[in-house]
Amino acid sequence: MIKTKFAISGSLLAVLLMFVSGCASTVKVYDGPRLPANKLSTLQPDFTAKSHLSEINIRRINGKRVSDAINPEYKVLPGLHTLNVELHKPGGSRSAVAASHAINNVSFTAQPGHDYRVLGEIKDGIGIVWVEDKASGQKVSR
Image 1 (cartoon, rainbow, N blue to C red):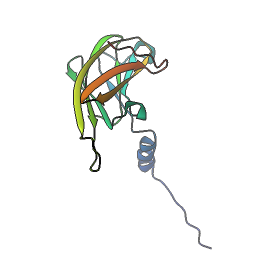
Image 2: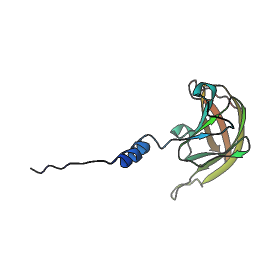
Image 3: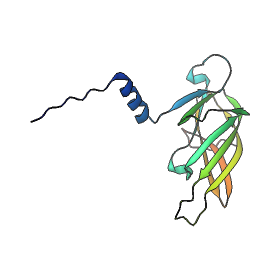
Image 4: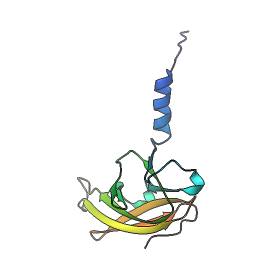
C-alpha cells in the first residue's frame, strides 16, 4: 500500500479559495474614506441564467469608467446612479442566431444597505437593461 501526503502552500490555498468563491472583486466607486456596508449600496452584473446572456459588463457608473474586474461588486453611495452597460450574446457556430452586442444606459436610485443586480437581454437586436433589488427581486430602474 502506498501512502502519499498532499500539502498545499498558503498562497496556493488563497488562490484556490478565491477561485471557489467566484473570484469576486470589490470596487469602491465613490470619493472619500471607506464606509460601513449599511451606508453603502452594492451593485453587481447578473451572471445567472436569468439574464440569458453570456456577458453583462458595467462600463461606467455616473460617467466614470469602472474596472473590468472578474465578477465585480461595486460599492456606491445611496442616491441616483446612471450606468453604462454592455451586453453580449454569442450566436455560436451552429446557431441560426448571429452574435448580438448592445450598449445601453440605465438609471436607478440606490438605497443604503441594499444590494442590486444589473440584468439584461437582447430581443430582436435591441438591448434591454434593468436593475433589480437582490432581496426583493423588484425592478428599481427607470
